[in-house]
Amino acid sequence: MKLNFLGKGSAFYPVFGNTGAYLRSGSELYLLDCGETIFDTLYRKEDLNSITAVYVILTHLHADHVGSLGTLISYYHCLHGIKVHVIHPESTITQLLTLVGIDPEAYIYLEHLPENRAGLKAEPVPVKHAADMKCYGYLLFDDRECVYYSGDASDVPDEIRTRFLTGSVQRIYQDTSTHDSPDPSHCFYGKLEQWVPMEKRMSVYCMHLDSACEELLTEKGFNIVQI
Image (cartoon, rainbow, N blue to C red):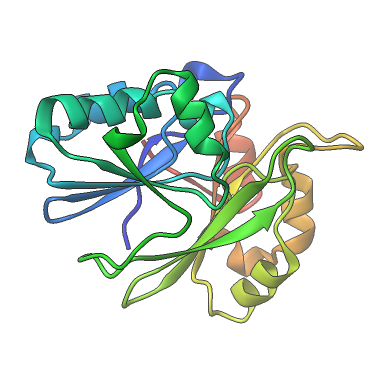
């Protein structure tokens, strides 16, 4: 499973663009989040005219994760007659889309990723990020491997850590912060140092970076997503 990243930055560090990733399977497009910069980056990177089905898997509803979702939906509905599949465990995303002028008939809302030609499965995992909304990471499966995508999260859930350390999760893509606080929204890299032994750190891909901290993180043994 190859995740292609469109950005690796936090909301307050726009230098790296909004964090989000996608994979293609033939003419089908699978997106993980759709923040403010994502549609523009995707438009320049992929031939969107060649896409026949779109699935957007959302971790939560902050602007740097859904900010261009309305544009993506409108683009495919108006120009191609395609309804984007919007995947999120909470139906509040439909309220948000209505507020920004997106007709419910222009997209298909689903709580879970349906069966698809890519054989991709996405299992939502509740994570700690914001007190005022429910947020999720995802276990992503295909016929070859299982990886974990954190979305925005202040830690790595115990179950995910255990599955990663025992080998049933092959890679972790983790929101990583250089700032620690008593009530964090993002995962301080020092916590990852405590949780992940050195020999496993190259399989932890840091994302949602809040500064130009790649050298610091690679010195600690972690990997960085590439855009």
